[in-house]
Amino acid sequence: MAWYAHIPHISANSLPAIHSVSSDKPWLWLAAGWSDFIKAPAISLAYGLVVSLAMLAVFQLLQTRGLLLHALGLMAGFALIGPLLAVGLYEISRRLEQRLPVRLLDSWGGWRTNARSLLGMGLLIVLIVLAWLVLAASIMASLYGDEELGFFNGTLLDWQSLLLLVHWPMVLSFGLVGLLAVVVSYVSMVVAVPLLTDREEMNMLTAIVLSLRTVRENPAAMILWAVLIAAFTGLAVAPVFLGLIVVFPLLAYSSWHAYRDLIEH
Image (tube, rainbow, N blue to C red; front, top):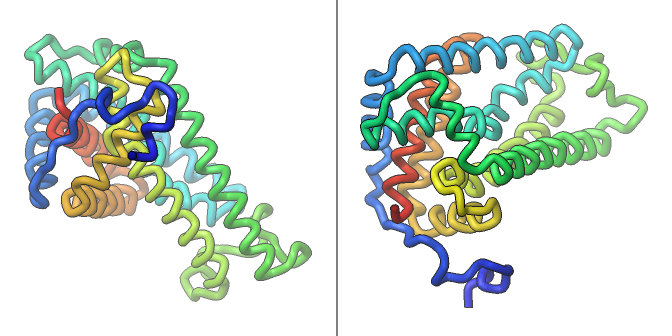
């Protein structure tokens, strides 16, 4: 018996069917996402610009306060919060799919469909980020000692020491724990957030179970999709987050089409 069958209100028979897709399917999701982008360019660029400027502002704030490692973590951690930031764009893709009018105000309908479960996902992301920071800080404290560790006041790390890998154990431990957090977030939410945006009756726990099963049943396609998301996001955030103006809506639309291909309508 599957492990999720023991969870109340969840059984194998009650879950929507999961489709098996070919390993090269993520490339078609990107193509479909680009098609949505060019159908609604103004809305897409507006979303991308807001997200880009918001990430840049937070990055600059952390950097000026001496929290360089946190600022770099923000770049990697964008994958954690990206799915929730894209809820409005999932709604745009849904409306384009149904040939409904598309306006910027309509994008907020994605939150109204299942606001409680989406807020629950937001809380889960916050808990993952906090666990990342606490675990990374604990590892680094064991390496440097509480008295020598200046991580949280920014005295231990600057750009020069980072580039020279002076504090490579700190950077490595922070990065590895961050990678674990991103992987957990990805497998839990890759189809869960679009699913909650689309279906009012779906709850957060069921959506996460479906996401985990989707990754398990389509390992090749989902690994490639994760690599593509990481590659596009890395290229987008490198030029001070400006690439997100185009890449963020592109990946959001593509993620919607991934969900539609993977989960029975």
